[in-house]
Length: 318
Image (cartoon, rainbow, N blue to C red; front, side, top):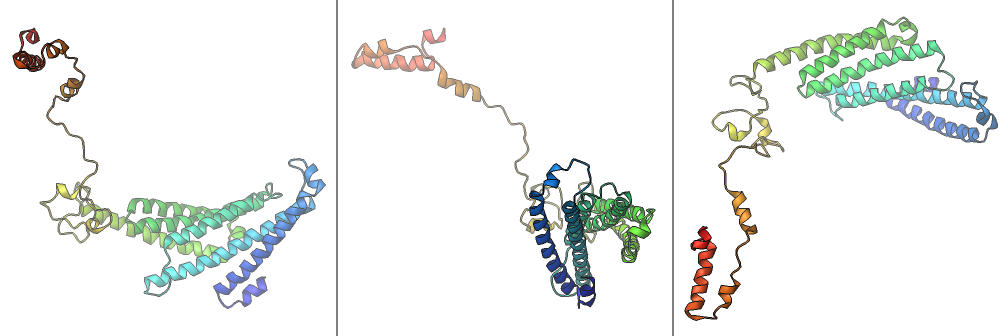
């Protein structure tokens, strides 16, 4: 496989060769796992005891699969980094984002964590320390591209914090006692270049944060006369008499009016008495209604009904 990779024309051809090998490894691992299910020595093995030959073979195949997966992902990282640099130079093709590189480094870190957990290698301290050093190195790259994503969102403080964390990981990886054995020449060179890039990006992010702070008023709005325009915390209805360049007004979520509106006191309305009126028990008027079917007496009964209803009668006053 190494000879085939050395003769490959470009990274795409190398990735194709590695993916073919990974498929073969997957089939081999599945075959060994099927054998392990029927192996009586595996069932009788005590926890912490020596591995059987099939278990050692499985660990060996898993190690090959994980290391080749890391190798393939690193080739994908190189291609993505080249595309990312071409984008800044006006290159054509698919535009790579820092988030894409962050995801690739996250997968690489997961593969290294699986390498640490392979059966039979838990007690190998030299092996575990080498993996720890490589994990610190690739954590530095992951933090750097996360910071790049945050800086692209104008979140300068979070970006500077992650740049500093990436720089700390670089120092720990290069300053490890086993750095010479754990890190190859290419990885050490990439870490040195990353350290220089971090220094420049920290100064750039700090300068942008200072300029943004000077160009805003107390409400976080860009002051007039500044080149940048930032989102205002005030809704448009509260600043109709002020001119502000707010690009969010043309977006899908314009800051026009605060919903739901804030609670505010209003004049008291006797809602309680309006509702209580439905539950008032009035005196019975059946005797007056049934006293006469019509005429004056009926009219008097109706008049008495109205007087009793509105409180005109003497009994009602009492």
